[in-house]
Length: 358
Image 1 (cartoon, rainbow, N blue to C red):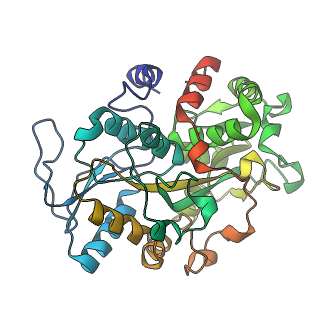
Image 2 (tube, helix red, strand yellow):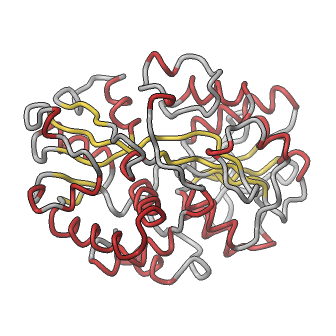
């Protein structure tokens, strides 16, 4: 994490208007639903078409663009995206407050949604939308809805570890026997979501101790793809990442994963955490009916099939076809029960900074 980014993280969500931590969302050229580039604004951002539905997007750009294209084809409503990372966009929304031009916010991980929810900026999601998605994948508050998911995994080098030598729990990685043998990317929103789950499940003291052990034991990388490459090259025995980085490389050349396999932690372990991507409607939106309709589309059978067809994340409807041929079936995983509304990015950043990981 760069010094400016770290200073913003320490400043807190209310004061941060720009980048806090890097996620996986794209910050590439902004486009309308038709794919036409938007003209740049004076501040370096695209000018917004105020007749369009505006999405602040921290999900994969190709996924949200596919949702936008499908929604526009179905309804005729134009959609425009602004892209960034989870907490970058969340903090921008907090800074903009009721003056934000955004109608919908979409993230890759739940903590970014909770930053906006805790600032009181979301309106309730229609019950007909929430009912489309199994309850465990949406917050109990009803302020947003889950639209995709990714599983925490331990990727390991098969030449370094046998199945019998794999950690039975994420907590085992705090043991000194794992010194310099595993890695992760603590500056990323993905890993911070995993730590948020650990904090919710195990409490502050246990989480602090685990992070202190990580600061001593683990090799630190920037980005889950870099962790995967390090494991594949034998620099470390294993690493904590999300599943789709491995599956993505396997679907291509396998050059960064051909010496590795995935270990899914069992028995509701903190390391079996499933991170939920969310979509919510801004209370300040002047197009709430269209915004609610867009979010309902992402959570519908059609929208969930787009998840299955576009990215290697998990759709949340069991009736979605195709993913079980590629991914370990979601139904076979054993994640801990966590209310997505409980995940706290601010507390995690504070703890990780305290122990020297940020």
